[in-house]
Each structure stands twice: as structure tokens, then as C-alpha cells.
Image 1 (cartoon, rainbow, N blue to C red):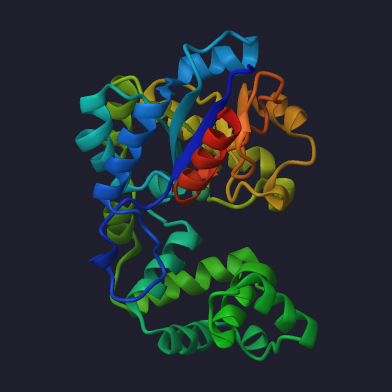
Image 2 (image 1 turned 120 degrees about the vertical axis):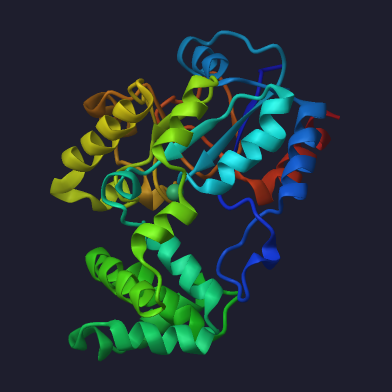
Length: 317
Ligand SMILES: [Zn+2]
């Protein structure tokens, strides 16, 4: 039977009770430990070099395997690695944005997560609208946009779904960036402090790389690569250069921010060749087999592991 490789991704790994309101949907450190041990009992936990040999050269893995990945360079990941992965000898891949390192400016999605997790939903809505430039404050959603919002955010109250829709699909990214920074400032949080609390610093990244983990690209400021436009070259080059200077090794993999089909380059192979990446990683699909293109590897989220692994058990019998 064809060998299978499962890439698993983690974002926040922290106690869910660390914040008052939903907004950050973490896996707890205990659940993380359990999931890694569960995976290690059923799969070979591959290191990044084995995965490269498998996807680039078709070299066999010892058996069906899992690769552990982390997106966004969060401080959580250093703790998870120290407490769980390092004692098990697991080597992981960390996809890191560079703007927090070079400018002490956070990525919009993390500002939004934090603001939502620390303010009551109605208050978040009021604060966001108040911080918007006038022309956007008065922007009403059309009926079809409201219907799209309801379809996209099925778990939210309509007003909350609509505000998410406004942020993610209607407002220009630079406006979201400015507004969320203004909201942080209004909450009395300096963005530099926010970055120190949220992201791994240069020292931590250097140590991860020195310990045999991989620090790889995730764009400078977490914009979808499909939305970089004429900034594509500078965003990728700045990300690559910053991480290379930080760790002493040039990144050769990229995880496309958001990772869904709309956020993948139209031609991932051309994109990777243009920017000197050997491997590109998405966030959709399930297992990777040797025929898979290395430029948009399938990958699943931690919350999909149970379903995907149990479906495989059924298939394997
Ligand atoms: Zn990300």
C-alpha cells in the first residue's frame, strides 16, 4: 500500500480559560500532549528532512508518518516544544511571519483574536465601528453580503458574523491593520508589548533552529499570497531575509497564510520556484502521498486529527 504522510498544524496551544471571551480557539497544553502521544503511538513522527526526501525524491518513510507543524510563530509553540516535543525527540516545522520581529508590529489576525477574546462581543462591534474611518463606518452590508456572512459564520450570532465578514471580506487589509492597532492602543496595550507576549523572539527562534527544528516562511505580515499584488516580491524577500538572519539558515519551505484554496498561488510550483522554496504547505485536504505536488502539500488542523485518523483506520481495516 502507498505510504501516507499526514501534516498536522497547530496555532494557539494554551489554556482556553486564559481569556474571558471566545475569539482564540486554543488546544490546551494537556490536549496537545495527548494528541502528540496518540499520533506517536500510531504513526512514525517524521522529521522535516525525512519529509523532504519523501515529497521531493519519493524516498520511503519507515511507515505511515506524521509531521508536526506550527503556524504564526506564537510564544505558545516554544512552550509546547520544550515541554512535549523535545523530551520525545520530535522535530517540528515553525512557519513564522517577520513583521513582529522587524517592526514590533503584530499581525492583524492576532490583534483581532485578542480583541475579541478580551471584550464582550457587542462591545467589540461598537469599538471596531468607532475606530473605522467614516466612509467605512457607514458601509452597510447588502442583502447578498448578509446572506454570505450567515453562510460563512454559521456558529455566530448574525451581528457577530456580519462584523467578521466585514473584517475578512470587505475592509481593505491596511484599514483592518490600522483599526486593530488603534483598538489595542485604546485598550492601553502597546503593540511592542503585545508582540513580546504573543510571538517568539529572535533568540527563541535561533534556539529552535539550533536544536534541529525548522524555522520556515509564512510571509512578512500574514497577508494571503493571493492578495500581495505588487508587494509579493518584497513581502516574501523580507520574510526570507529576516528569518535567514535570525537563524543563520535560509527558509526553503513556505506555509501559505490561511492555507485554503482562495489563499493558494494560482501556480504553486511557479510561485515556489520564483521565491526559492522547495516545499509549499496548504491547510486543506488530508494525506500526502509521493505523487503529491511538493508545492501545495495537504495539511490538517489539530481539530481534524481525530476524524482523519479514524477514517484512515476504517480504510486500512
Ligand atoms: Zn498563519
